[in-house]
Length: 150
Image 1: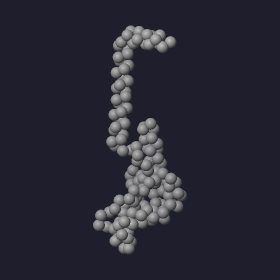
Image 2 (image 1 turned 90 degrees about the horizontal axis):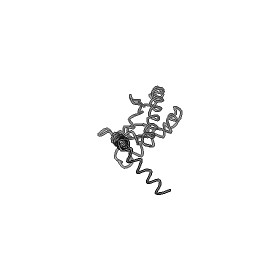
Image 3 (image 1 turned 60 degrees about the vertical axis):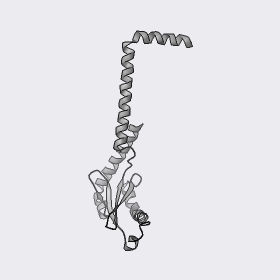
Image 4 (image 1 turned 180 degrees about the vertical axis):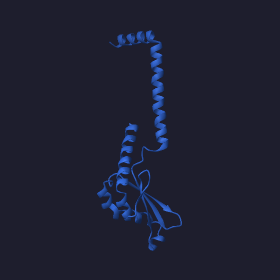
């Protein structure tokens, strides 16, 4: 199930990347840039009245994102992108990155699932070899088990 979800995330990422690269000019007109892996990003500067209100800054940045909803709807990525904001130290600005879901594209999660699949394959191989090398005993045991229940 993990690898199916991973596949779906990769499909979404490829869709975002393709659309972002195709619409690079429209995004640039709205001060957005596209990097080589398809993330859409910009820097949002805070107005002076927000500089002394750190508790409201992130909310204000998210409200500014609402101004671009029509653009994202028009290019077709509004339903698959997620905003991530990071403060830029000593600048009074935030980096806004719009990217796809990354629940399954994490390194440790991917590695852990590879280890689990590898363990399953090794376990099944061991069972296969044991059954193949001891087929007479397994066959007798199986026939006795069947006759016991039926």
